[in-house]
Length: 170
Image (cartoon, rainbow, N blue to C red; front, side, top):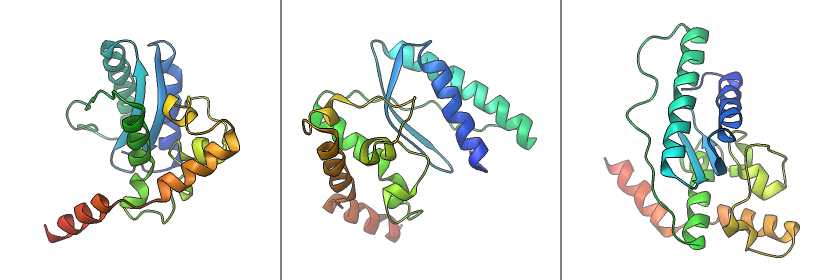
């Protein structure tokens, strides 16, 4: 899906361009080389569907033109799961931002440029990402929230080790 930094930036630019028009807020994201993750909030699932349709269509057009590509770029429809608690919201954000670590592309989530991790863990400015309510509830100051987020994301879970071990068997 992405061959260079310009491709990553193009998709993020499209998200920034179209989120406001579709009344969608991005809380977390991670762009991997072969797939993407976005944790978004909207009053209607239809808004997210419309947003993803236009962003995927525009990015496909961009990619096809730049790389002289023909055929499909995205496989199937995007997946959409509802989040009903702050705890699950935090865990989903963590899961998304740990993706490059789990894929062994980097040793630390902060080493991957194409995720919202820098926004939460380091206070990086990003006009696409809006802090989630779960993150805001971690502490009363930004410094403490950032430190808590860094520790939370760095923590390896037992289930991650089990999944990795099972995948290696396959």
